[in-house]
Image (cartoon, rainbow over all chains, first blue to last red; front, side, top):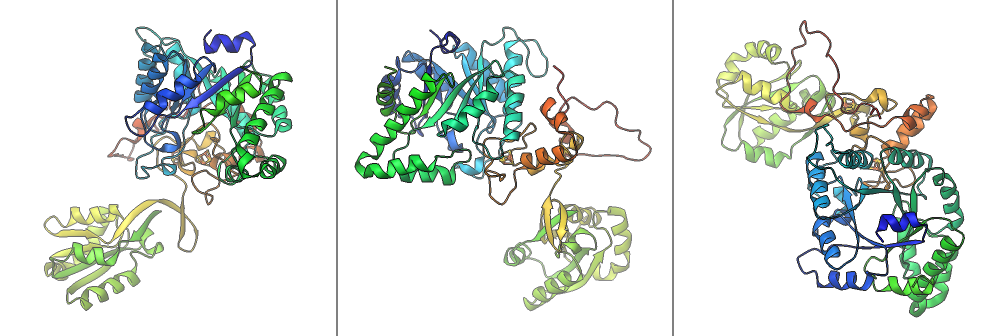
Length: 293
Length: 233
Ligand code: SF4
Ligand code: SF4
C-alpha cells in the first residue's frame, strides 16, 4: 500500500525521517533505511536541513526506493529558483518519487554556508501551486508539458506558533494551493493540539502530528529555548528530570509511545511523524511500545 | 534615501596609495544625513590625508551627487584645483561616485563609502530598510508593509514556521514581517483580503539590471505583469 493509499485507508500512519549525510559515505544511512523499512509508511528525506550543505534529497529518495521503502521528498525554496525547482520535480517524477513536502526552508544564516545567496524565488504556498500545476500538465508559466507529474503533495504547519492566527491563515492558503497532507512541527501538548485539530478537521486534508524524541530534560529545555514553534510542557520536563540520567531516554521513549497511543486511540489525527534526529534505531522501539508493531 | 557607511580608513588609504594630490567630493543630500559625505567628513578626510603627507587640492560638497549634469556645472569653478588633482575621492553613494566617473573621464575616482540600502531615517543617523526597489510594488496587497524587504525570505503569503513570539527566526531583533502585516491588516479591517488572496510568485524581470527610465512625457505603465498579483483560481 502506498503512503497515499495508507493515509486514505484510515489506518494510523507512521512516518519517520532520514537526513542525507555530508559526504558520500552513506553506509549509516543505508543501515537506518533498512531498519525502518517495512515498519513506517514512508520516510521523509530532508533537504539540506538547517541550511547545512549535504547530499541532495532527490538522490537519497532514490536510494530509499532501492531499499524498498517509500520516500517523501522534502523540497525547500532556499536553494533553487522556480526553474530549478520545477526541473527537479520533473526529475523526481520520472524517478518514481510520488510524495513531495513543500517548505520555504530555514534561512541560509542558520547553516554552514552563511555567505550563500538565499534564493526564495518561491515560497511554500507558491511551490505547492507549482506542484499542482505540474500535476495538471502545465509549468508555472502556463506552458504545456509533455507528460505531467503524479505527486501527492504535502506541507508543514506549526500548531504551537505564537501568534497562531497568521499561521492558521497560511495553513488555509496551503490547502487552497493544493496541499493534501500536513506534517506538523513537533507537538507535546495534546490538549492544545486538539484545538488545532478541531480547526484542521474542517478541511479535507490529512494531518500527521510531529514528534521529536526527547532524550533528556536538557534537550527539552534546549528545544523550548531555541526551536521556534516547539513547546515542551513543564510536566514532561519534570518527568524526564525525575527519571535521572540513566533512565531519561527510556522515559522519553515512554512519553512518545504514550502520546502516540493517545493520538491514535482518541482519533485525534491521522498519524505521527517521528523525528529521531540521529536516534533512528529508537523508532521501532517506540512503535513497539505504542503497540504499532 | 541611500544609506552609506564609511569604508575603513586604512583600506581607503591603501586603495589610493599611488596618488599624490586629491580632490574630495561630498554630497549634501543622503550622504550628509548619513554622516558620510558632508563638510565635516570632508574636513576629516582632508586632515587624514594631509597627516599622511598627501596634498588635498580642493574639496566640495555637491548639492546632489547623483545628478550628473548639475554636479558637473557646480564643479566648473574648481577648474584650477582639479587641474592639480590626480585622484578624486567621492564621499557619497555608489551613484554619486559614478557621476564623478562620468564627469572626470581621465581621472581616477575612488569611493570613500560603502553603499548599503534604500533606507528610512527613524531617528538621527538611524536607518532601516523598508523597500528594496523590486520594480512592481505590492504594498497595496500587504497592508502597506513590504514583505519583500521586511521578511528575510521575502515570503509573500504569511509567516514561515520560524516565527518565535512574533520575532523572526533569522534574528530576535527583527520583528516577523508577517506578524506585523497580519496585525496591521486586522487593524485596518482588511484581514479578509489577506486570508482570501494568494500572491503569485513575483515577476523578477521587473528588476533586471541595469534599469533605465525616461520619465519625460511617458504615459503610465500599461498592464502590470502577473507576478506578485493575486492568483485567480
Ligand atoms: S513591494 Fe517592491 S516596490 Fe513595493 S515596497 Fe516592497 S520592494 Fe519596494
Ligand atoms: S519569521 Fe517571519 S520575517 Fe522571519 S523569515 Fe519567517 S516569515 Fe519572514
